[in-house]
Image 1 (cartoon, helix red, strand yellow):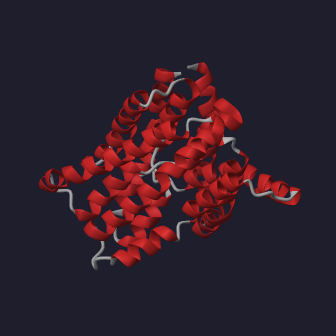
Image 2: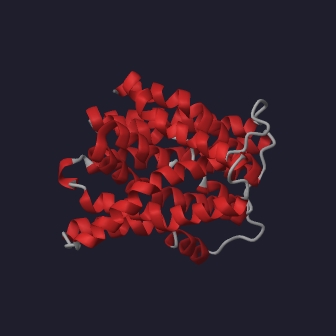
Length: 307
């Protein structure tokens, strides 16, 4: 447990530092918006490409790790959709449902990669990147489709949904990194020098941006929707993923990586998508904030159970 907490501590310190900077030195939303776009479109995609380019995928259980997390995200998505009628009877409207859905299924990649790297170095980073390849396309397709169905005033066409998903820079980064790896394409030294420099800065800046985006108002009395979003993501999702990982025969580092990736809070980019497509953005902000705070307790427990 001490090792797990030591790996998590720098991650949550950076998130807290982001909270402090947003309220002191960098109060303007435009400052953080610029950092968010830089991280989302440049730094983080470069980290994914470079990690997958350098990863020796023949030595890691790609199918087991990716399969367990892919299936857990799929099961959680289908469970949320099955509960939609019951949630409606509890007063949760369409936009609020989309926020619960995103809160339950999406994951904070900055936290997952940081903790994986802190615990297991390059091997952990490679395994977590494999998990991203499995999860990112699925959760983006489902999130956009659910928002289009339940939140948007005007229903999105299938072509619009496909274009929204296809324009996701993280999906492109995963595809490019895997393609270079599989084809063994040679890259010049200057590429690695620049890519490594950009990659090193991506996680730290991403965690600071995550902290700056937290909404601390109203946390002491969370709504029903926020409580469900937290329970689904921090309790049910790790349980599903670990059961599936054990079914796939995973153990050791691979099993721990699955626990890390399943137990992280939801992605802040979900909030941006909710704002763009008519979801309940304030509810999602509350879900993200609660999950990020409580993950400091639940993540060490989930990891310790399999470590």
